[in-house]
Amino acid sequence: MPLVALAAYAVFLVLAIGVRAALHYRQTGTTGIVGLSGRPLSLEWSAGALFVVAEAGVGLIAPVAQLAGRVQAWDGDTARLGYAVGLAFVTLGLAGTLWSQLAMGRSWRVGVDHGERTSLVSHGPFRWVRNPIYTWMTLASAGLVLLAPNALAAASFAVLVIALEMQVRVVEEPYLLRTHGDTYRSYAAATGRFVPGIGRLG
Image (cartoon, rainbow, N blue to C red; front, side, top):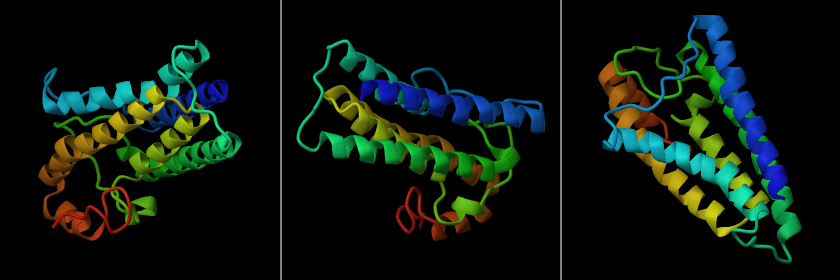
């Protein structure tokens, strides 16, 4: 089902990036897309770069490589079940991502501008986890791996998980602590990082 994976990835990009940026532009006059932070090859920059490469690997490169016969699909007796679960994951992940993005309102950004101060969002899905967009994106990405199951997709997904951990711990949490201080510290002490109750800041 690599063609379905490619189509799902395209829909995700259009809605979660394109449409969301257009909506943000109408609200604020900017797209909200900041891009990579930090000096090239710094840990901060590398986190964002790894994230972009890993997402492209899961949603674009791995399915194309499978279609071209460059990587072998992991087909088996449970393949049909895997495809169904994968499609469900992508659908739920996209819906959750859009919900979380909309909950951020004017504070939504792709990347971090260290000179900018946005409001701390703690309502909607942010009541339960601090990074629900990443949580739902991870679920959607897992679905893409199930739709085009191969070694390249699995490796890209593993890199994606590492990149998200780096992005949150190295870039976003230090920025939020500097910007919001004790308010963020109290919020982070009571709220999990990616799943409820896990990854709270002590």
